[in-house]
Structure formats: structure tokens, C-alpha cells
Image (cartoon, rainbow, N blue to C red; front, side, top):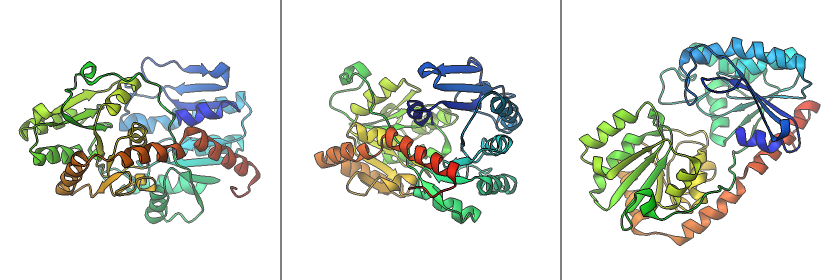
Length: 366
């Protein structure tokens, strides 16, 4: 959303209403004021990367209050809400208050997360909220075919859904040798990037590394989250603690340096709404191992971009790793670099531009 908003601000004035956290200003300007961020104070929201359930629910009254103030101060043409929950109800209210068309973007975890007991598709109350938000929107867009299908299957939503894929900007980073990243020159490195949460299915990756029985292979896990302590303990108990590096949260530059210095990218998530990290790996020419469940299947193809495996199949994951490490393919590297050019932020923003214009005039998206 940040990248789309930034791209749109090259031609329009874009305001973002979001939640605040300790250390973040209540208002922020970029691009000479064309892009402005407004943050509302939310009860018990302290961390910037995560929110508690209480703070998620508290966003509604705080967001409505700030949204009404913004409607009175500025003249808007459209409201675009990302996530059916927790931000969906706020977007619905603000759009109605201002008499504006409401475009809803559904992402993934806001309507379906197989790793959480309180996922809206399992929770009666949250499920009703999602249905209400879906039915209240003037236009609905999903980031992948998978998410559009789940909205229909899980919530009975029958109105049109415009699928607008996410995009990435070409990264700007300085490549560096492996030793500068504390990597050994003759080892094979599997890299994985993501928040350390259950949905990312990192235990399967650790078990696959154990099953490989190869001391020349190491796993780099880039990211942080509530599952880190558990995963570090699991790696130790499996006897692969010395083959797994938990790099934690890193800068964008370091992330791309690690990607470009590795041999293979693997993230067998239980589900991904889209999977931007796969595109980031493809930019660096890495073969990609992903699961067969999720929005990444819109752009990942078995044998052409890497391998697709069932997230519950550790042996299949191990076989895919062995295949891609033992038979490095230049065609996959070049193919991935070419394919990723179809998914740039400018194209995503242009699709939203057309959708916003259509929503204002009540017409179909061309």
C-alpha cells in the first residue's frame, strides 16, 4: 500500500489514515505534501510491527473519529480501504460520512488465515463483519485470484471482484561478497524471508534441512516475530542449530544482499495472499520454492520459476531443495528476472487509478 500510495502521489494527492504507535508522528508529509500520513492514537498499540487484538478493535472508534475530521478538512474523491478487517468498518463509515465511493482491497489474512483460530472464516462475529464490509463496498479488489475465490467460497460474495496483483520496485542496493555478510564461499545457502509466525510454516523448512543430511547446506531465516524462540529451540532439538542462521529484522539493503548471495529461496507457507517476497527473490534471480496454496500461484509455475510443494509434505520440500541445489538452472534465473518485470508498482497503481475513476462514475473497469 505504501508503494502504491507513493506512485499515485506522483499524479494525485493521497492521504493515508492508519494507526499510530510509540515514536511515530501523528502527521507526516512526503513528496512535497502530495502524500500525507495521518495516524490515530490506538489504545495499547506500542510496537510498530505488530498489534494486539485489543488495539485492532480499538482502531475502529479512533479511525472513525480521525476520518470524520479529515472529511471535514479536505475534499476527497474516493476512499480506498486495505483489509476487510480491522480497517474495513472504518473505511465504510468514513466513505458514507463523506458520501464518497468506497473501494475495498482484500489481502489475505483479513478474510482467511489457516493458522489462527480467530480467522474470520472460523469466527462467527468476525465473519459477519467481513461479509458486511464486502457487501458495503462499491467496488472490491483482491490482490490475487486465490483471495477472490476465497471471498466467494467462504463468504458467499457474488459481486464482481477486480484482481489487481501487487508489484515491486527494482531495489537499490550495493552487492557485496559473501564474507562481508558472514557467509562461507563454498556452502549452499537457502534463504527465507518473512515474519516468524505460524502461517509461514518454518518448522517444515527446518525438518527439511534435517532430512537433507548435508553439512554444506545452511538456512538463512530473515525476519522476526513471536515464533522465533520456538523455532530456535526446534532447530537445536533437530540437531541443525549450527546450520540455521536467524538474521532477525534487517534493512532493505541487507535483505537484498542476502538474497543475491544465496542459492535458493524457500518459503512453504500454509497460505499467502500474494507473496511479495517471492517477487523479491525472483528479482535476484533465485529459484523459488513455495507452497501450492495461495496467491503466489498466479505468477509461480512448477519447473519454470522453481518448485511448488504441498506445505504439509516435508519429503516433497526436501526433494525440491535437493533438485534445485544439485541442478542449478540458468534458465530459471533468467526466467524469474524476466517474469518479475510484469509485476511493477507502476502497473499496480495504474490499475487502481482506473478502478477509482470507474467507481466515481459507476462504470465497469476497462
